[in-house]
Length: 539
Image (tube, rainbow, N blue to C red; front, side):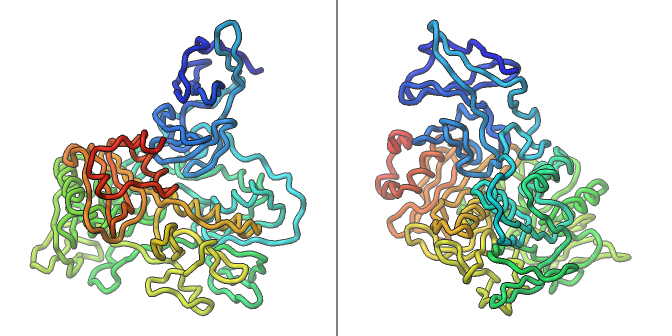
């Protein structure tokens, strides 16, 4: 039975304030908006972030860590990466006190979000669909971030027809972001990976075809060819097959035992098993995957070396100054770097890797080699149906339409960024989810343009960097704070516009910057060189 709790004095908060209170073995976030008190669960149902450190923007509450958004009046999920809505609780003011009614088993943040499936951290999942029957079949290719969220959105938006989710993976959709972080570090096991319990798909009538590859597409007859199954006829199709890792097939020794890419849960399993007995690990590539893998495997016992083509890691994405900060952070944890280096061969004995050879002639002993050299869209099966981009991408319009009745989302979609910033293909988890939701709505005829601001995060040694916007090139980077101490805001200026921002230790600033980007109200680079109160600028 629900119970009512005496939470706080009636004058506990000023307008626009929010604060966490303990009640019934859980935490309640109390906030005051337009003279009214509202009560919500205090932790984000994505990874358990404390929402009192978030920001109120309009009628939404923004998570400080990964920018999931919830409607404050009822906790409704407005933006991922959370999958579930935020529980909300009835509030009344009487006798000079604020009273909140909690259910018998209120949501509680997980003690270890890294070790908990994303949708079990403490949210309110979508109810099984009660939509009217529909004769149409919607097919989603890809069980990653875009495909999973698209299938969920089709149901929450009221589609009552058949949904078929096709994935080449052996498992139902899982949280790929954990693979190079908590999972590889041993802080999470396989139970922490699924995005949903298996019965979620049954309850929402989503047919999941695992271990199934799309092998061909005929646009004229709307037929999707599948491995191990008959062809599927679709009324609407979403292409979200994701990417496959580059494996350097031209490199001698690339196929030796002990050489692994890191893209799938199976890849992560191979690396975890190999790392258990490895003393010397070589990581080829200083990508985000490569660097996160280095941080996860650095236990103070293994000798880890990162081979990078650039002088600094992330130099092309974040610039040399931030790259140097990350390099020094890794060095303090015992990771060695070989910058501006080229690998010429992987050497082995009896079919197993023993070393990596550089163009300089240096030989690096290795028991395990991890490939962090980028990915390519998994779109080979689409070549007869589409004129693919040089990198394998699929060009789409503002509504993510690739052809009549066909949409594309996630890693494969070359889409127009808002504000006329050109066509880009962006490999971010949250962007993929947002595009999956947008594509789903357009499959239902809602005619919605994709206008979201790209956002991603990386975590290494407990230090988190957040990035908003998109800058493939810049004229200057404007810094506020101290990069070396991991407390800074970096603003990327191109053609007299601020097009991206990166930050560490500046969560509140980043939430405001994201919204200013979204509404097109970022200051000029000249103004941004001065100290700015980003929250006040947003207000």
